[in-house]
Image 1 (cartoon, rainbow, N blue to C red):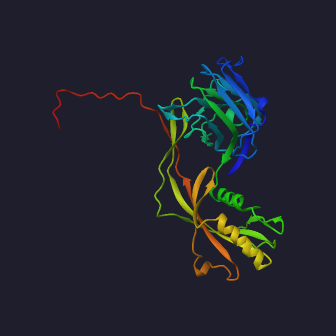
Image 2 (spheres, helix red, strand yellow):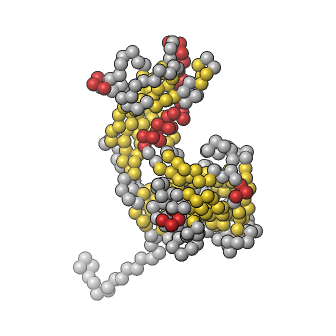
Length: 343
């Protein structure tokens, strides 16, 4: 996934806890840094926010150098909390993300962009997505303010790992996930063995030993039904339903390349452990199906002297435009007593 890091949550002093007036320090909201807890980003550095007492409209705020987010379709915030939160009565939202710029500060006229933070399960890292499609152009072109505002008096302890702008890509993201699983995970003669993606039809690299991955096929998975719509982009006045997703399969040939059969056998043993015949691979926080498949038909067969594992990854791609949904507060039905049943 192509990404632009906005805040890696490492400059803890850059954040300020403010009261509901947006100026004076908050007495009920605290913020500290943590350099001990493991994080999805791998840096073991996170920002910990905690509320105590009434904190409605209190906020955490920081300034950044202006960033142009126009090329980026969405944000991803990696976070966890000690309680689940969402649009359910038993787990209401308690935090909301806002953005601002010098031309359109947070709370100014014309800048009403906000996103409430969902968390399906307590004490588990999640990375909800927030569309930037409706972020006002004056903000999107030069974001320099980030704010997390309390939208309830719910006591909480929240941990923030990273805020990034993102752009998903099925091939590139799966390539990256496979490389992350295989690259430098085994050593031959004390030297870590690299994993490398080679474009379909490109010449083979001369490097030995090497774990070589070649994508060679992409097909629609007609046998799989389209996944249903997904609720997202929660605000105080509604949400969006992301479009249904269609399934595709991507096929790869994985080769253990080495100068000797002994080295090749060691690499193959590693691949047998790293790539189960039927399993999953994490891609952008989603577990995608990963499985072995038989070699392709003869007209696309690889040279017989190569020892290959053929992999298939099933991925989903959203289609259509998200639909804005506004909650219904009341339904009124009028019945005419003079109307005959079935009339």
